[in-house]
Image (cartoon, rainbow, N blue to C red; front, side, top):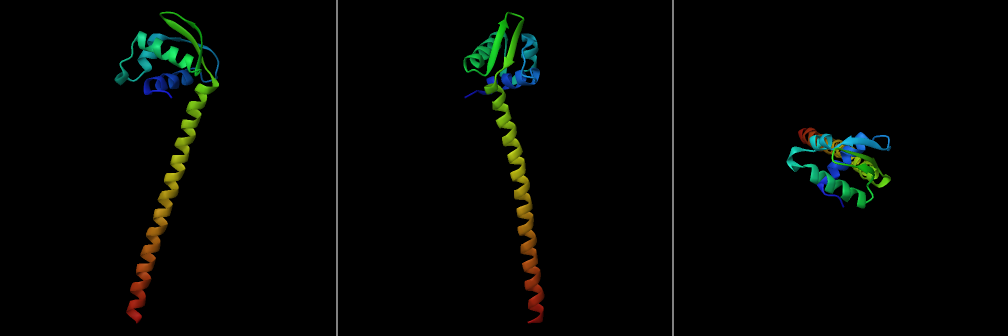
Length: 122
């Protein structure tokens, strides 16, 4: 299971290496792209990259103090495919809930109107 920092770094790697091929990324760029709330530095990026490598989320071809050559593995790409599918399903479910509530609201008004209409003739 990935923590938030690892997940965010993996998201950045997936965006940068969108074709699934190796790409040389500057560590300074990765630090700048990470959210400020995580307060990452060079050591943190190295730790996160090693964690993702051990977990077989990424493949690391080359690394030094300034750049890394990296590629997401299928497991790393699948994490975000599942996340995107979940977001789509939530959106569909929320639309269904809205229309169902709208239908029940109309049904309640129709019953109230019918009851009011019938009570005037009885």
